[in-house]
Length: 360
Image (cartoon, rainbow, N blue to C red; front, side):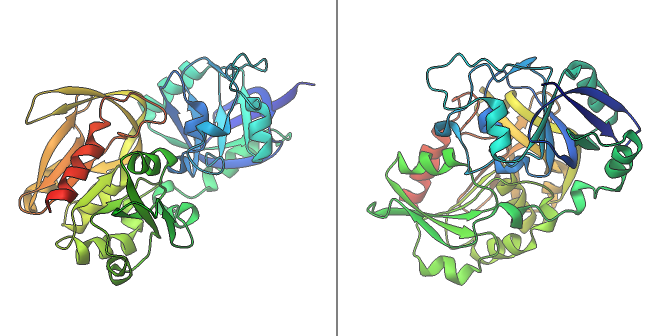
């Protein structure tokens, strides 16, 4: 049976379509991702917490869903917007349909949306708050819900996705890395385990003494959702530990490390989300295709007042994609070398950090 669904934006736009997934009404920031594959990985990426995710690729659901593709233990996106949802799975690995997947985690979806037109609107006006309903909500009610929803800059999202307790992985390995979990992805953990590096995963607000008590050979700050300005606990920890261990930051991790040294961040107009972002390394001149998911970035002009240096830039808009420290052992990038989804061009970065730990 066809279920009517609606997506309303804070500017008063109301778009009608067909609902799938869970029947409910939710609000969040409407963002778009440009990847042609990987909807399972994206929906389970903690960095999409607070977002209503829209896919620019016109057909989603055709290869179903497998738990092997999860990047966390649940769907973190608040809702899913697609042009067309495929209900007939054609992949031998699939364990469930996209519709069943969203119902399992009580997340609504809407199909039949002109996602190209909506993407153009977001690119022109910027990411907007929206409300998505699959349970017959009134148009005016949805618009009001979108307008009254807090801006993502004002929401504490990291506490909602970070581990609540210290966890260990690969305890038999001799080499250990500490990860402050701001929204870590499964592929990041596996990237270390594949290199026989054990992991101790810490909540985002863990103090530096607790981390040092575990005697790690390196410290990583993970990716995560929302505004880095609101994660002061992690920034404080980095400030106290930066000269004691090699540092590795991915996505929000780079932003938090940069802020701990005095750099500034800002919210982007519509962010980078997808698996086709070109990044240039300033030293080698090489260009990599990268997977990205962020709505905030470091103000590269603010680096001039710190001991940090710009190492990589995005070729689409010139924003910061990598930084280093003039003296300390540090490896920071804005994109996702672990992919999931996305290209594998930059997997070597985990090897670079492993070497950094060995030589420290």
